Length: 514
Image (cartoon, rainbow, N blue to C red; front, side, top):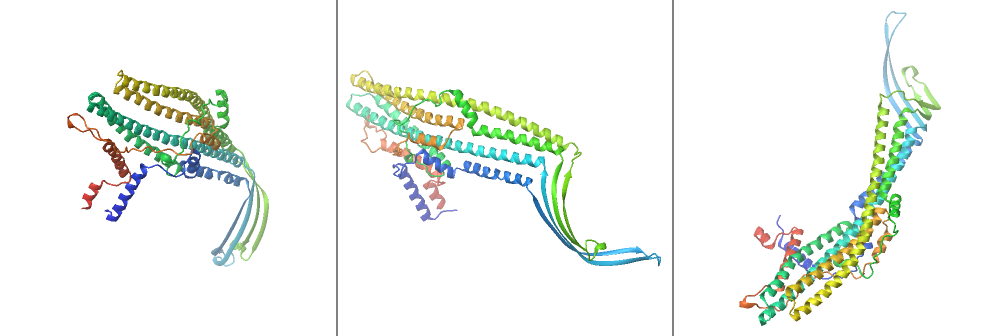
């Protein structure tokens, strides 16, 4: 179906507005990690599904309890009856048929109270264990949600850092290209220096496009969890000055294992799963046992049969009912063996879960320790890279270094900055993973990490470079300008957003409409 011209114009206007917003800083208040987590608690579909599942599972207890409580029932009936009775007449020696039309009715009120039903008690205890499994599963999903939010949040920051570094690197390469071209015009430079700077500049353009796409995907991933728009410019950034690089507490790994065994919700869920199967075995075994019920009944019948036409009976009864199973064809024994096998399976699953949790704890524990060392090493590497750049620039002035050396030194700085930022994010997320595996991830932990964030938000990297004088080269041939290259980047991003909005390109759309 073709859109009207006014609708097409409105869509074009919104696309242009979106492009402007993409390149402009976000001015609203910064969203920090705690805000994102609280939004996710209200909107994340996976967590809300687990919440609904826990609510549904909680109804198993009142349903099972009903099997232990009195059961009251009432029955009533009313019918019109027509009966023919044929009898032999002893005096006349023949058969005589009599016809009776009568109305029969009755009411029955029965109260049944189980006194001994082993299966019902086992069912009730099993339901309690199943509810505990659902509650621990919900707690696991809550802690996992906190971890997913944190990972997605810092992925956005890391992607934004990468985009910003790419933009800064592009600007530096462009300036280097300008200087090399100017030096070549004056006869003081070489074609190699100019072409090398131009090649580096062209190469970083594709990196910037990839980085912009990574930011977009990271933002959408976070938004899919929180249910709210999550532009990178709206997120509070990690403040390296506030970040505390400290080893895990408690320091001993064995204490983390003990903490995980006691607190890990997934492991607790498996423990309650064992209890549920213990009760399942007891429930199936009780198929061999008798049942005893207390029964109280009051009934009223009128003209119940042809022999009681016109008679009414009021009956009150109270007594005990004993049922003893004798033989069920082996079904009870088979069901018991099946439950025993399920119990063994749940025990082995718990043991496997415990071992896996210990392994995960060791991995995350080591990652936190290694993350501290990695961050500190990269901080020193960044200092060294900056000193190396300064020395290289001095070497260029002295004639001992060339433009290629400067470009390599700058590239080393940007690579180290990118790696350092990622190492810091990995350290933070690694600490949260350690808490999650141990089962101690809570809002208080999120609040602690939140204190490491700055409240000013993250500045969005601007992918457009202002127009600068375009240098001419030897032979009158002109190189492409920075604004033109930047326009190609913006055009690529604009095309991606058009595809995302299911909008065809303007030329194709116009041809279809014509």
